[in-house]
Length: 220
Image 1 (cartoon, helix red, strand yellow):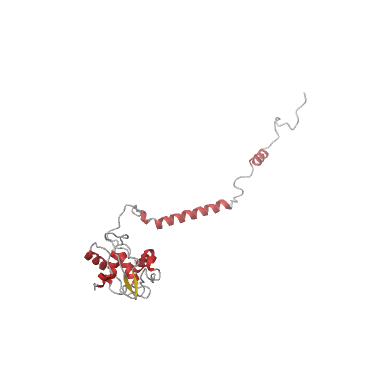
Image 2 (cartoon, rainbow, N blue to C red):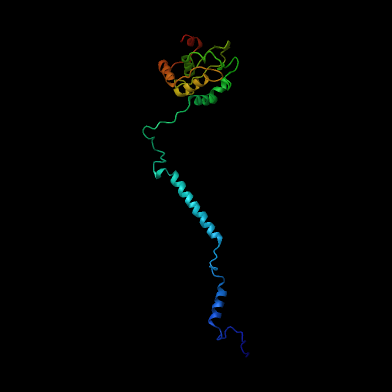
């Protein structure tokens, strides 16, 4: 049987010192986490980034939280007492509704279609009696119409007001806004019409059929 080699690990290392054992352990463990107090830059950068995000989030929440009140968003809530809805410029409202509906017949230029739809630009009807214009828009118009020296009668004016048989059911504010717009557009310079005036005409006439030119000419 052969004798063990002098390098056999099973042999007792009687000659090893404490220093050599510590050095061997340190080598086996590798580099210590704190390498002479030299910290890595990446963890520090991430710390600052996340701290900045948390600070920004806190500031944003505090600014837009509405005082942390549960009533800030309440889909079933009601406006506070005395709060009034923002007023819309009647001419802006009138232009919007004119462009949505009226341009189909009277055109964006207000010139209408010869022989079919009468012009509004420079029209003696538009710039004349406001009561006649209110009645035309609220109740509609049928039959021939003479405007600016030309005859029109191929198409009837539909019923726009909140009356029986209306296809639009426009409220008084909307009708007043459209009339005010056409009376001040395309060179027209007539006074605006109020919603109260429209309501008064509608209350006076009630529910009735479309107007005709001869009936309207009898009105002041």
